Length: 277
Ligand SMILES: [Zn+2]
Image (cartoon, rainbow, N blue to C red; front, side, top):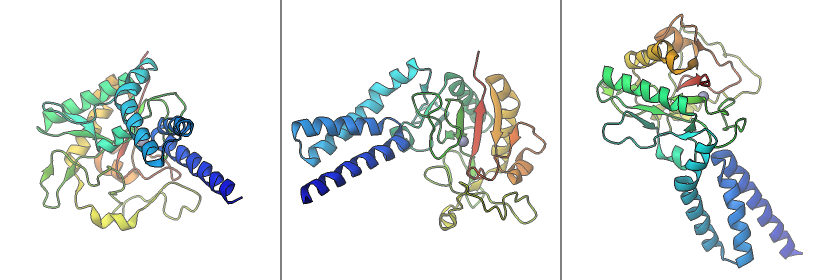
C-alpha cells in the first residue's frame, strides 16, 4: 500500500512538473515525459534521469527547435547582443525558456527599430521581453493573453540612472517586467478600485529595488518611430497604460489601453504587428 501511494505521488509530481514546464517553455514538458519514460525502461536513478533531461532539453533548445520552428514560420530572435548588433533578449533565461520566437516580419521590424534607436542615440541597445513560443498558432504564452501567433512582442523601455545618466543597455529589473512607472498624482488611474479577477499584479515589495526610471526622451522616440516609420514594417498596435501614453505619445491612435483584466503595461510596452501577405 505504501509503495503504491509513493508511486502515485511520483506520477503526480512528474505530471505537475510537465505542466509547469509546458507553461514556461512549451517543449520542456514533452521532453520531461519522454526522458522519464526512457529512464523508467532503463531503470536509471533520479540523478541520471535529471541530468539526461537537462542535456536533452538544452540540446533541443539550441539545435533542434530553431529549424523546426522555422518550418512553421517562426524565427528565433537574437538572444545575446554581439559587437555591432543593436538588440537582444532582456535576459538569456528568456531564450533558454524558448520564449524568444516570432514571425519573420516581427524580427524585421525589431531590427529596424533597434537600428534607428542606435543611430539616433549611439550605443543604445533595444531589449525585447516575452515574444512567443516556437510552435503552433493559438498556443498561449502564459501569463500573456495574446502572445499566441508570433506577431506580439513585449519591449523594454529605455532607462536612466537615478542621477539622470542614460543607460545605453539595461533595464530596471533583471527580467524587464515588474518595475512600474506608476501614475503620479493627477494622472489617469482607470483601474483604481477594480475588483474583478485580473492579472494586474502590483508587486509592491519589488518596487524599492528598481533604482532606474524610464528615460522619457528615448522611450518617446521609440514610440514615435513605431507609430510612424514602424507602420511600413507592419506595426499595428501598441499597448500602454494611459498615463504613460499621455506623457510620451499623446493623441496617438495606435497606442491603446489593454484594459484592467490584463497585466499592467507601465513596466513595458506591448507591440502587435500585422501578418505580412
Ligand atoms: Zn505583451
